[in-house]
Image (cartoon, rainbow, N blue to C red):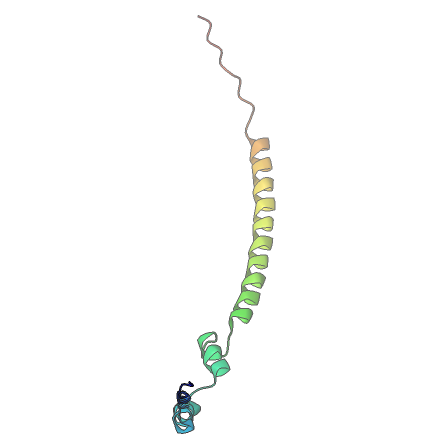
Length: 97
């Protein structure tokens, strides 16, 4: 005896999200600021000075300070040498106990 065949299982198709929702989200963000523009405004001053220009000017200022310190050290060495010549040698006192 043969058994009756079971009906084939129903295939349930998943509904795909409507494309209209995706377009609505894009429209909300479409009018916003460009990402590069936003980042640029965070990393630059109102005068247009960026981190890179600040670092370059910092480097230049540091070099000037180093040159001034070298000059100051040369002057201080000359002053110390001149003062050494002016002060007579003082004898050391030895206690004779």
